[in-house]
Structure formats: structure tokens, C-alpha cells
Image 1: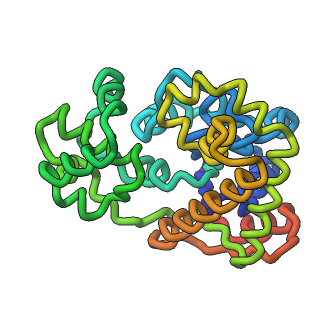
Image 2: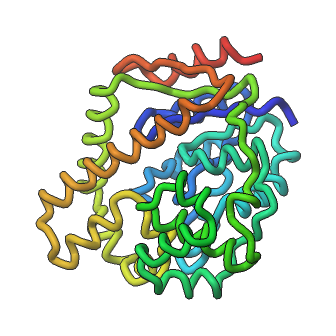
Length: 294
């Protein structure tokens, strides 16, 4: 196995196109670091690589699960360990910071997800879960995004399964990354315009129809339901808002998500920040990145 290359960045930053160019030049394979592209059917909303792109370079961790299944950082690490030694040059690419950290610095002692417990917790309202977290693990309560249901559920799940605070079982992540870790950054207005253009393209390509066909499965999987776009479109299908309002809402939620991603990645130590000018072709960004490989 050659030295891995890591490419991270917010949604719509162009990292997938850059990773494809790099994998082609280095005879590598792409390891998707994306918590939603693992699901079959979630195609438009997760901006999966096209069939042509996947034919030109082997991609891992894409379309590996049905929407009835669960995926988390532990499963990501386990699956990656099972394949990485067979890859000549792994190119990690994605925007799920938790998966990058889990792979690079470990998972700690927390148990894997328990389907029965997870189903039980999904029936509990978020306010009650947050209160339980405060009672049993104030340290996690103070630092966790308490609006992120998926993360709150995971923390409470670990507490109930082990009887110990979640904070005592997580790996102590330092944020240190290896030399070949690259963070793609774009100007604020450029990134926002790219997000708006992407959302409009997804709607035009049939995101509403895709969501409609997957609706029952999505509503049964609280993890997959977090995928940007799908929850908002389900609201539209439930007559909560019209289509123009839905498009605006997806754009807004995607921008908010991108800002959170940027905040996460900027805390990393040792990452090479690669500023991408507006309209720079992916082939040029890839060329500049390759020049910095060690």
C-alpha cells in the first residue's frame, strides 16, 4: 500500500472531482469518507460520483447498504481496515469529519451501535434525550451539538449500554493529521454560489421524485434521513411548504452544514489548506496538490 492521500472540505467545494483526478494520476482508488453515500438510492441528494467516474476509478464505501441498515464511524473503520491493504494508493475523500478522526486516531472504547437500543431511543423526543444526557454525562452535554439528534442518540445509547459516561469512552482526539492531508477551501461567496447551483441541479434532475420513491425507507432510518435535501423534500411532500420554499430551505440548510464542516476541519493540526479560486478546473487543483505530496 502506498502512502494515503486525504482530501477533505465542505460540501460543494469540488473535492470529489479533485480526488478523481489524483486517483487517476497516481493509479489509486478512492475511499469515500461520507456517511450518506453508503446508502443505495440516495443518489442525487448526496452527489454521488457518476457511473462513468466510478468506472474510471474504483470507489469504496458507496452503495454498500440498504436504507434499512445503519452505518457509523465504527463500521467505517472496520470496512476500511478490511480493504486498505489491497489498495496501491488510497485516496480518502469526503466531508464527514467524524470518520476522518475515527480512522486516524481511533474510536475509543465505546460499543458499536445496537439496533434494538437505537430503535427504542428513536421513539424518545430530543428534549428528553438531552435531559438524560445532562443527568448522566454533563461533560458530553456541554460540548455536543444538542440539536443534532443523531449524535445525542448515540451518546445516550452508549451510556445505557455501558452504564458509563460517553465522554469517558471516546478516543481523545488531538486533531493531528498526517502530512498528506489536504483541506480544500473556497471563497465564501464562491462556495455559496456553488451550493445554490448544486441544489438547483439536484431539483432539476429529479430529487423530489427520488425522495418520493424512497420516502417510507427514509422515514424508517433516522440516520439516512439526516441527508441534506431529503428531509426538506419530505416536508414538501407533506404539504409543509411549496417547492420554491423547499429549494430555498435546502440551500440554506446546506450552507449551514458547510459552515459547520469548515469549522470542524479548521481545528485540524497539520493539514495543508489548498485555496481553490473560483472556476479553477479540478485538473489544475489536482496538479497543485500533487506538487505538495510527500
